[in-house]
Amino acid sequence: MAAREVEHRPIGVFDSGVGGLSVLQALQAELPHERFVYVGDQGHAPYGERDDAHVLARSRAITDYLLLHHSIKALVVACNTATAAAIWHLRAAYPTLPMVGVEPALKPAATQTRTGVVAVMATRGTLQSDKFKGLLSGLAGTTQFRLQACDGLADAIERNDVERIQALCVTYTQALGPFGTADGQADVLVLGCTHYPWIDPLLESLVGAAIPRIDAGAPVAKQTRRVLQDHGLSASTDTHASPLFTPLASKSVGVHDASPATMTTCASTLFCSTGDPSALQNAVKRWLHCNVEVTPISV
Ligand code: DGL
Image (cartoon, rainbow, N blue to C red; front, side, top):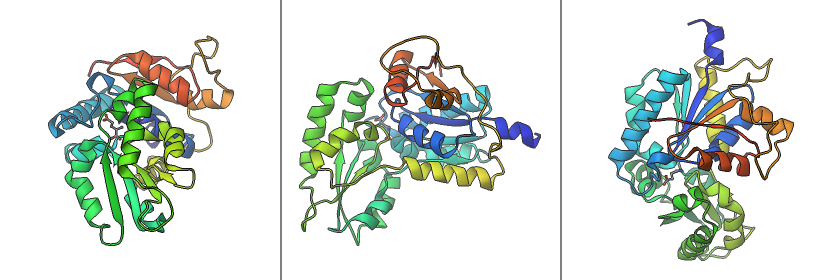
């Protein structure tokens, strides 16, 4: 394939639903010349309380779809649970496809903590995975990690069920506490699920503004840049990404008006959902501040 063609192929990004938009946002900021195809697997979500076989089969099916229908040049698994359950399999099944996954930011948290106590919120699937246990055992000597499996939280965020989100966050942060800068208190909170950055203001209000909340969006975006460069797959930087999709700029579909800057960002991404497209459409409007059409897909 000619180099010019390679440059213009999009990067595939997927999550069980709207959570991976937090990674997509970081990718769009880090790589403004790239195009993306985002798949929210909302017809088969949440992943966090399902068995590995389900998550693995879904990850495989979505990767096949992205390769077959969009000729992606690289894949970002924008989901901690899918990375933990399936990235080893995906790497073996698609050895020539450059791939980046996401894992809870334990290492940066261990570097930042002064009390030596770090709290971690993640899905049950992530915390029970061998991948996570390996990551933890490499760091556990120096730092104490308090782990909380947040059953139901990704699902509540997916449904934008504000009352349930509030109730679950109160329960889970209390279970992880106390937070603070004194001995024995957790002074860093790791957001180990890509859905959780979207509720950061609530978490900040519960644990205190002095407690940094760390997610992996920005490091994943930087790693994606490195991987593209290593494979000679970076898009040309002399032009902005050509649109994959035309945002609904002229139509008024609701709460947020898209600014020209965010419209350009959204125009470089095609959004697809295996479930109700309006849930993803609303999340893109709410968080990325632009109006897009979401393509329903059957995968
Ligand atoms: N956003 C996903 C993660 O980072 C999964 C949430 C879910 O489907 O349970 O783990």
